[in-house]
Image 1 (cartoon, helix red, strand yellow):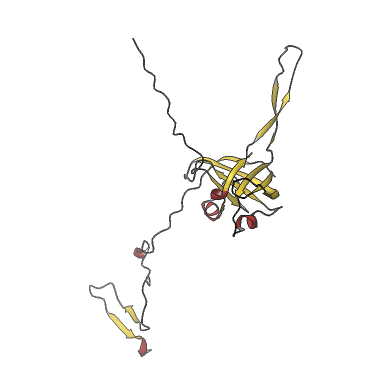
Image 2: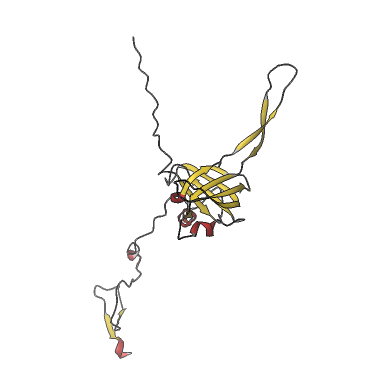
Length: 212
């Protein structure tokens, strides 16, 4: 008798073209970046040629004892090593350099799986720019510069991607009884006064603007 086993499947992907790298000078709550903050962030993604670091690590404590020849260990302090982003250098624009001068403080926000609302795949690193230096080469390659960051506080990992905020259409609240002006007028207007609505017929008085 043969048994069949169903293989667990994954939707695997290439980070290039999917993951996003954002720079945000300030966040209200690093654990819950808002949709407004994500939308207004400076997008670094398309200019990044290389990325290094951006991981929370642990410094374990060894705990050997006389009862065993095995050197056991326990978790120690968490740490995040200095991390860097290498950018292609734009010949005419210095937009990225203006955003990331030496000493600048802010947040590098990594959307690992892209901008998928609800996905718990946002990593937020509080950082300060330690160095920014151009790289020089005589080889056949594009000009680049590297920005090195120090991690100034504990990063927030696996945070949810904020939901998209839907704006109501301009006419969605027309049923509330408010008048809306959607067009241009020539300068004249008509005042409409409803004298009575309790009877079957309502009396309506119209006044031209020129009559006062």
